[in-house]
Length: 420
Image (cartoon, rainbow, N blue to C red; front, side, top):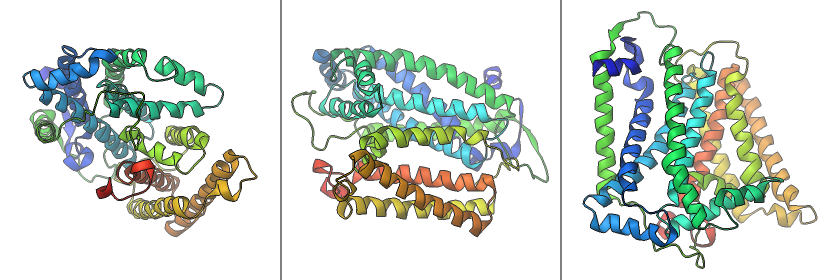
């Protein structure tokens, strides 16, 4: 057992590297959740039938007539939800401790790819129950693809194997979810772990006065064991008291109101409420992905310190940026919803300009003015300035996602959660 453990960890580690608040065990939790997903997914395969006439009934049979069938499905569902959240938090931890800079740039990209695969794995699994929630969520999500210039409609038809979600879509998603994506995740995970080991393990502060080296076993393995047990217990609590959603069988002739994308795409769907579809569904997400991907390859005058938020200035500017982003996004959403209608005000212009380019230009101008202000106020280094902008991006995504999930009701009107 010890030999297996040492394949994943060095024999000895720095004591400060295994402090819980260094990583919060997020990477290990993500790996454990993937194992749980694989195990419960294999069990579900014994009863699931990936055909529209049988898929829904096989889920009902599993839940009502198979011993612990509902529990296994609930564990699979909640471990999938936790996997998205914890992988996202792991990416944030990596960024805010500077673990994306040299010599870890490639591993940052691998981490982004793993996060994308986790999202797509959740997305392909979302359709499999073949109920109303799944059918219409996938319909809404895949419709965003049609706004990609030149190839949008063709790409959407390729993804769903037709002009609308159908039996072929279900079979394609099933094979991706249960075979292709798991293999890709395993391969990238192995490479990810190897790159972490190659870079010397977890990044730690480079100004430590005293470095203590301790054996990985039992110092690290016991901590990981406790974190794993707590996580498993938490998933079991959710699995016992909160069932995985299952509405009526899918009906292509009757859509839900509101029809929402899966929760992890709610932020993009919320953007569609305020921007032209080309900008909300393609241009803005693409720019965000490109910016996050190139961050490690910028030239930084000083190396990563290994400290949370790089420095006290970095911490202060990040807090201010988070507050700024929350106020800005909430204000802009309310203005867009109730006060300003650019498409109506500028009706003489094409919608892509009046409701796309102009609002985006205004938003970028506000961010640029704030950037100048924050850099001058705190005299930020490039690392700290990039971090402040990253905080704005992530905070904006979180706020838009929360609005889309909890504050959009019938006809996608803004409302309070208790009115949903």
